[in-house]
Image (cartoon, rainbow, N blue to C red; front, side):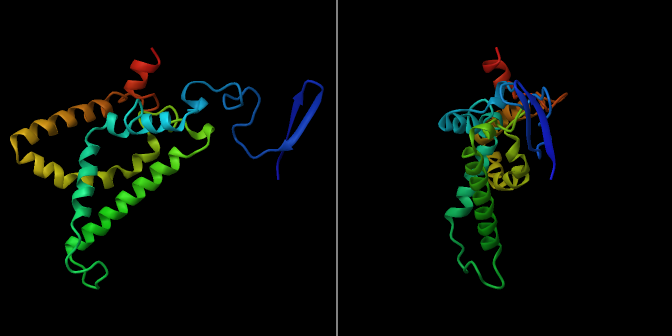
Length: 191
């Protein structure tokens, strides 16, 4: 057990120390934080910005709309030969994988949307909602069949190019330093 001794106006404070950010003049002490680190007081506003606002999963990378459509496409078709068979079909495997990816995505996003005020900071100063970045490979897998479908149609190719341009712009904007706020936050909130 570690203890911290801190001077106060009329004496000393002795408390259990277990926080690496607890030191004199730390940015993380109450009253010193600013910007996104203050936390978003409104959960609905936080949810908006996490999904489609300045740190939005879908506004920064509209390509992820294809992942939602891909999950819906996989999950609407109930596998014909059962879901627990020893020799499960490829269709059933894809159904289970889609359900797993959608479930994990939903639970993780819901978890972060329901964090206390101090944690409602969009993942801090980062080029997106960083707590979901680890799901990107799974979301790409879900998007693949929709991208394939759209790529085979002239109007679909135009749509794909537009969402890819927007998504690539958001990904390359912080190229020099990913530890900066995303471009919508810089352009519309900080100005």
